[in-house]
Length: 160
Image (cartoon, rainbow, N blue to C red; front, side, top):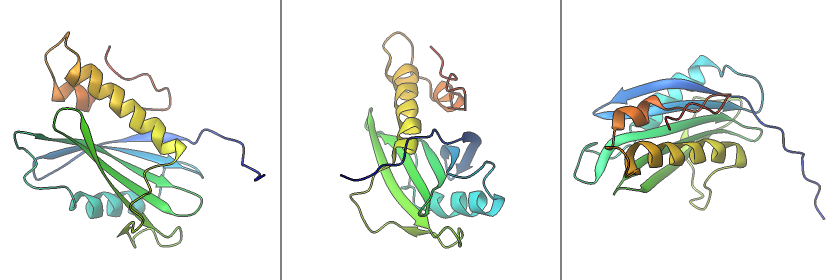
């Protein structure tokens, strides 16, 4: 039987919204170490991965909104880029860089990788935010409400 490290919730922070070519992407930081993440890791990560968003951002089935998770892990730095299409479908791309060279970002070759438990917390939050602000039949869909809802260390920032 393998020995597993006990789960310890990693600190996270909302980094704000980043816009490029009609895309509006919410960004988060997670760290196995301490926050804030190094500024170059954040700025270079955002700049690099945003170029992989499909164009055009706005179509009948693509809304130009999504989120990015920048995670300083224990093995690598991870960059998870996700966006919404076709009502309730999330698209996902994964990138990484060596811990000692955060600016050397590449697409992750292993397409079977999705996310770790720390990143899944944010993905779950974003899914719930999408349901409450876009898919809920009680209110008109609002991309502005979706973009203004974000996870933070208190995890309580989704409109009800």
